[in-house]
Length: 282
Image (cartoon, rainbow, N blue to C red; front, top):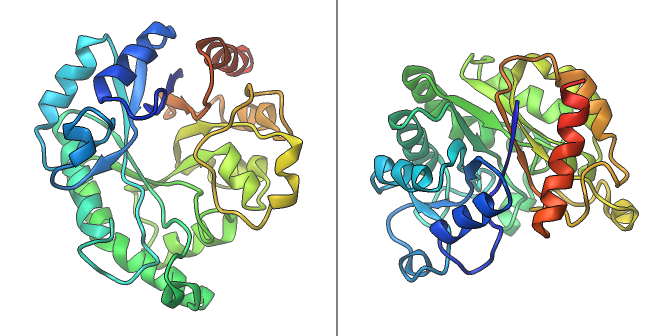
């Protein structure tokens, strides 16, 4: 398993600058971390590393290759609990992400429901959140199967941060083969779940991992927040049982890549990768 990085290494800079940062830090693989439909004013001005799902996938592949980087996954985090609207990143964008990924050989597209933002979404019952999430993922799952892509649910919301929530969404969708899990050590822990138990439960469904550790200052927020974008400490130095997750998953051959969601110096990134590889390869 290779350890790569997410491309938010230098804020308010282009995709190419973030690829350059990843290469300078000694990494050879990265995610397409941020995506959007149509055009982006900031991306056009070189102030964002976001990739348009309506662009040419092969141009993005060539850009990664220019810096000697392999593409690990494509992110399509969505607002699945919100009412359907052209302004909300949801089913249409996930389907675009699947076609984009398939065109250039990316196996894993990562999505999630994210936390409720509108009052309408906040007032949904648990059963309603399961239904609305599954309904928005039904066609993407069918498309992923046809394109040979794995659509992976990441713990990053009130449903996916729990073992039960992931299972209920999968069950309502009929447990499709194309629907997997993107393990996120930090998000699952922050949402109140034991990451080791989540890894055990969905081991046969996990295709990718996001690594982040969190310090003791996060303890009061546990169980009340649904995900954080990145951590600022070295993996293995916080309160999360990273080694326990590694022990569960390290023999799963289908996990080809994993991503450091760590913000900091190149030295911090390298030390985190070394910690993971030390125990994964043991």
